[in-house]
Image (cartoon, rainbow, N blue to C red; front, top):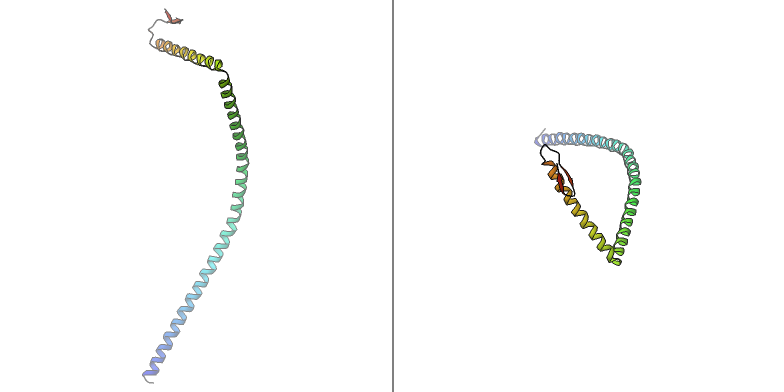
Length: 138
């Protein structure tokens, strides 16, 4: 056997080792692909019921939201009608506007007096004090 024959045998053995390595890699890759397929199938089987439950939940939540939306719209319409009616009434009746202003002023003045009374009561001494028309009695 000459040097060419030995080179041929070495090349053939190397080629056989490479072929075995490629075959092993292909077999391993096939197993990985099978495992990925099983995992995807499992995920699909578990995800489908979850998506159906989410869809049902969203439908159940949307029902009350539509009701709340209708109620909110009705309240909005009512408040805009009341506002329009009030402004129209006050625009047409200047006397009513003056009376309302006077009532508000009187209420604020009366409220201011009530605050001063309560401050004085908190600072009172041991004797009980009473107020009648801003006059102090002991």
